[in-house]
Length: 204
Image (cartoon, one colour):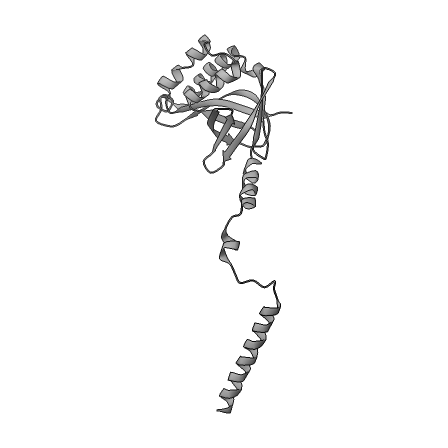
């Protein structure tokens, strides 16, 4: 009986001491799961910048790039051979449009800004990059262009759907009714699941 009374008394003393300590320590707050597991705006911004660092830098046009989807005409003909032939056609078209001279460079910053020098003029806007989806969306005025992006460590590849590529080529070339642009329209009609675009190299 006395032992039980002693234990009970000790529990009361410990509880009272703990309550007093909590009351005196204003910095001791109850555990809040939201404060641990909820991402703040700062956390989200940090993650965005970390993702952008994967592709940030100044890039120069190098050559055309082609991405076949498998069930396309390219897939049926044999990807390596067909891709090579399509790249050659694109290369000739790009040269006629003077892409390598008109489009000097593309700069992507870590904070989501892009700048493109076209025919000596600066175009700029914001971009959003999703590593999980492998896409980048360039925004300029009322134009929004989404491309699949691949960074192989040395080059940055931007792949567009054919109709999106034509929109970008018109912007880059400054031409809207050229015969070359009209000829490239065959991509939209015959290569619906083939993406074409640019292979970029780091600016030295």
